[in-house]
Amino acid sequence: MFFPRLRRHAKWMFLFLALAFGLGFVGFGVGAGGIGIGDVFRGTAGGSGVPSISDAEKRISENPRDAKAFRDLATAHEAAGNTDEAVEALEGFVALRPKNADALRELAGLYLAQASEAQQRAQEAQVRVAYLAPGASVAGVVQLGGRPLDTDPVSSAVSARLSQDISLALVDAQEASAKAVDMYRRITVALPNDPNVQLELAQAAEAAGDVATAISAYEAFLKVAPDDPTAVEVQRILKQLRRVQSGTSG
Image (tube, rainbow, N blue to C red; front, side, top):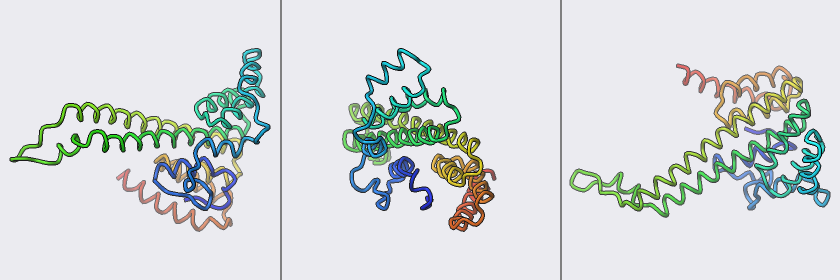
């Protein structure tokens, strides 16, 4: 569940959830009009003022502790839609400026973008399985004379390869989601009284299936902003998550 107060930070998280759960977030302009990762980043990168990738890389090679060069390199890669490269560059900046809350938040968003891309790869592989190896799935459920149909060797090989691709993509998505949660957790340490940060952590954790962290963050939000207009909705979500937690722990 997302709230209006988070609109200025929600692009990456909405894109991730749209791909993860097949939803279209029309109200925020993501997921309904063919907007991709590069479009989202280009919308935040400052247009014609985007730094040059080659220039930033040269500055880093000359001075590996040039935080501004890492920052510029991340911005340039974001503008180009190079998510993995942007993550690497921003990780370098954060290593040099570990308390920069804006950079931590942006890095969390990039991790969510990586998770969404991995989810998309998994979905595309699932479609390819259905198209290129339909016999593999049919043979497993159709029986003739009380025994399953023999599987076509080619379909089996294709299905096995694509199933591996799906598994690897889902692992990548899970790892990236966990990194996003860890990054939002670091932001809450830097900004413990910012209710937006608590909501971002809660929602990232909820999307990643980290129920305990989501509950803790939602509870922290209510402590920081008990009179916030979204408090009633947060309390409702908390009840649902606690039921889920009780069910899994029991």
